[in-house]
Image (cartoon, rainbow, N blue to C red; front, side):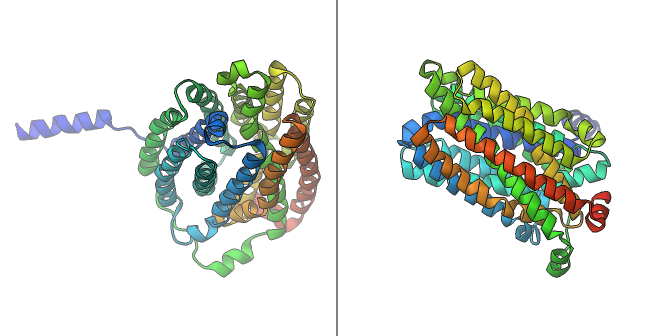
Length: 404
């Protein structure tokens, strides 16, 4: 009887178990990341009123939050010398969710700023290690899949941004955290089941010498300009649409929703383009489309046209980040976290100071002015991308890119 009971339990256990692949586990992590970001972004118009934060203050706090995010990214190489990708991801997922909950409970400018910075730092830590592990998964699969991971982030941001905005206006900001809770839990289970412990080299000097710093610095500048432009859409779209049509405030998440869904769709199919075309070429084309979308937004169009323009900008910027992060990781395949950490650290100045500039522009010239600045940032990024392409065409960099 005991043996039969044990066999029955074993069968039930088999039926209830779920086998996650590393690709599925990392995809779920990216989705959880995106949903946490979207839940907060959707609630920001409500949180600003709740905490008494104006445009200039928000721009300053966004800059501080970006600085905290970059600090976390820059620490990635040091953390990776002590902990592997799996350990950090499993730690960062629940901590980031707790930081999200805290950011949705604010009732003063101080608490808004403190929790915004804390949440940004947690996101940065999770960001660098899930991207590093995504690079390993792409390497192991032997085909381009990096863009699909970033597609899942944007889908998460888009859908939870729309839902989070509605929930925050209708029921209260804190309830938007329920969008992220089940996905964070599922990601933790999947990573624990599917991602193995991987130990990278702890010898600092050889790793530092192996990094192609000049190319990574140029790539970091482009990443900084691109992310700053993307944050302009993500952080300010809801505020812009709510200001245009106050009666539709609960639907102010449509901007980030269309941006995220279009951006994510381009990333979803982007790996097919990456398999056919050069990453640098795709980045240049994408930046040009982004400039066109921001140009429309800078004219201050109506609610509906703005939503379409956010979709255009999202489509244009879709491939830039995954292409550049994939290149950075391939340039130093034995130390991906360190390479991504260096590129992310260099991306800091434009990502920190542009949000502050946007706050001043929004206060003095209206929200449409900030999209003119974002378009200019994308135009500058085109020049740096051309420079990066020339540097990577040199034999040493080209050999590194060929090794996957």
